[in-house]
Length: 171
Image (tube, rainbow, N blue to C red; front, side, top):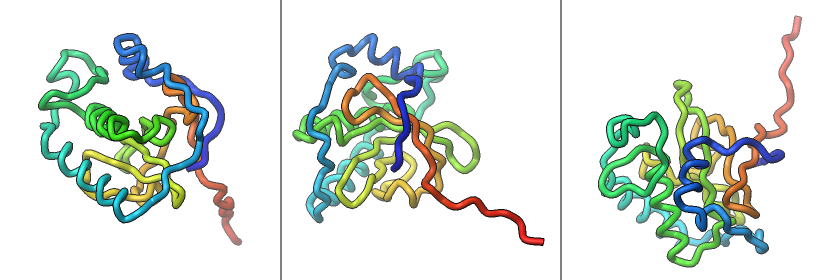
């Protein structure tokens, strides 16, 4: 995933940070991605399945009466709540915050969505509540907008599309 410069923090994350200041003040020095292994992939798949099954999908409006409310789910939540739950488990397992990045994007139908991006030495993978599969970010069909910065959990960076050549019409 190619990132650009600093960008605005999603409002839901900003409010989450006001309630959970220590979560958004983690500064990482080590920017080394995780080493992908069969064990890591199995752990990510098992976690994705367990959280996806444990949390019932419900909108923030249904649960909290607000359009956006990022929080750790108890038994129900929406996309960013699933991602936060997965992030918390992996951080408790000792994975550095620099490799566990909240990410916002657009689904092919245009809807906004959030996932957890896990940085590895073979590319970034996505933990998503819409599938139990752990996919490389560029295999999802999503248009990525922004994600947490690797060096500071309270900052966000833009995501640039790959350096694909422009295609022009031929007459």
